[in-house]
Length: 173
Image (cartoon, rainbow, N blue to C red; front, side):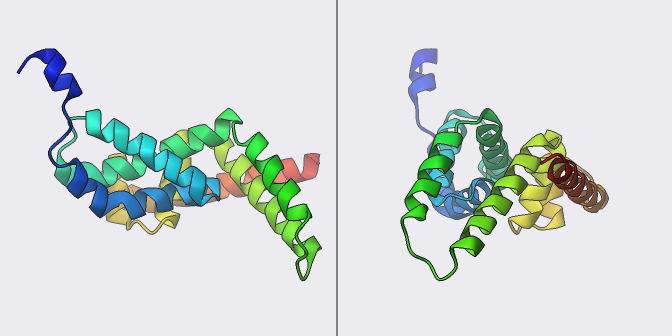
């Protein structure tokens, strides 16, 4: 097979890996972005990258989880979500809810947390997202190439850094 034919080839295991890991990939991205639609867009991008990669199928779960976290965090950091957030807030402003103040505060809180998460160092933010997306310490360790014993420390430091970011920006508001 020529090099150009190899580049255009689809992995034979892509469908199997996609079926097995899609829910987790969307879940990780959704925890970061707060939007199922955007998480599905991230999943599409991540699986396209996986399809071009040489990552062994046995290592796909960790690789895809990390890729989903990184891609979602990069999307957060890029600010491309601003227009979408403004549209979402505008559309919910017209909806009558039992307590609009609670809804607005919840949206603001989530937005603050996501902004603070985007300011964390990449490894901390990724470890935090993966752990709070339901991955075990062992899975996070494998995905981030950490020792299992250091995952708890990394996650605790990330949580502490996130609290500091939230407090720093709350006091400057």
